[in-house]
Amino acid sequence: MLFYLKYFNHDVEKLHELISFFFEKIETENPATFTTSLLPAWYSTTVNRLEKLESQLTHFLSLSKDDKTAIIKAFSNGNIIGTLFSNKTRRYAHIPVASDFKKTNADGSFDNSIEVFLNELFVDNLYIGQLGKKDSTFSKKIGCNLGNHFIGLKDSHAVSNEDFSLCPFCGIEPIKMINSEGRPDYDHLLAKGDSLFVFSSINLKNLVPIGDHCNGKKSSQHLLYSDKARTTRTISFYPFDATQNPYELYHFELICKEYPDYSNLWKGKWEVNIKPNVSSNRRIADKIETWNRVFNIKSRYEEYLEIHGKSMLDKILRTIDSSKPDLLMELKSELNNLLTKVYLYDYIFISTEEGLIPKRIMIEWYLKDEAYLLSYLNFKKLMPANQININSTLFE
Ligand SMILES: [Zn+2]
Image (cartoon, rainbow, N blue to C red; front, side, top):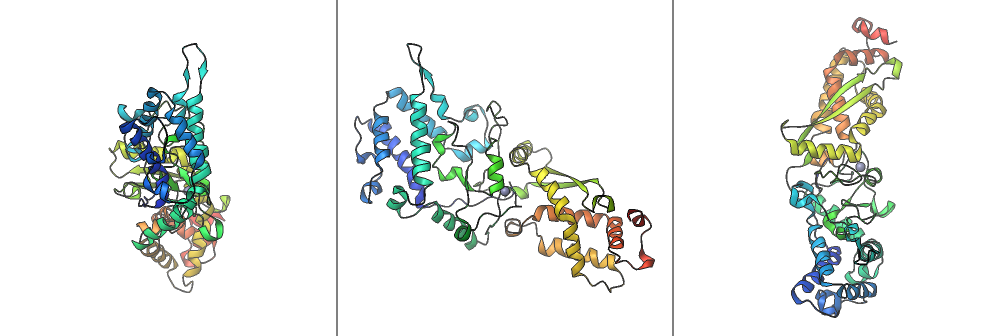
């Protein structure tokens, strides 16, 4: 991913905390019956009851001691999100899923009742029915919802001059504008569907705003397993990591596969590579690999260059004075200007300037290839006759 977000504390975290609180009570007090004293105080002091949740927690208490312990352990191990993203050692190799709870009874019959219960509790009721719904009973109880969380998250970034308006995973698509377009999608980093990572379905540390396209790409891939069947564990950039931003850890390399010229309408064909700044850093290389596998970043940047490279250069040419004697110098000076003053390799530029990375690497390539710039100026009939590059006439 391109940049990290600051984790933002907000009342919508209370739903996940309610479950943590309840499980802790079960472990320490082992009660036989459900009462609201097993829930945090805010639950009883606010209006309305989460009736379905109360009945599900009552059902939980009726499960065997072993089943209760196993569920609480899975909940605890499945919610150390930041650790799971950077650690794939044996201890963290398996991330608990609801389907772990399928079992065969003593009489040989198949039993998925706990698996079904976990999906109903965490996904159907708590996420879809409560946290994900704007006017749910939970929203009414705490007086806010995920939309308010998004506004708070945005504002907290604006306050510290690290505002963002782009998808942090790609930087080439905007995050929806909440008032006119609706709340942006929140991606479950660990997917909640298909009987998978249900335990973190309402944990805000597992939920991050994302662009529509990246969200679509992500739905068919896992961040922490390199295959669909979840046999090979891997690591990934974690969106709320508080360390060096990802863009400070790698650099991009642009290779021209087909020279942009008359024959391909000056679009060219490109190859983009992403390399760790410290070439021996295998962990960063693994995170880059996950980023590209899940979000198809290299191909998207390559196509971005094909689509936007020519028009970007055309627009730049419109801004320079064509009466100047040395147009090539004028153009190069403007390209340098863009790199050092407009498309800065810095958080606020990367998080708000659409396509900054592909634009930058394209400009760097232009600056390295003077012959190309001359041929393009010639094609645009901007070069005086005495400066026409011999090679460039071949393209016409
Ligand atoms: Zn995106």
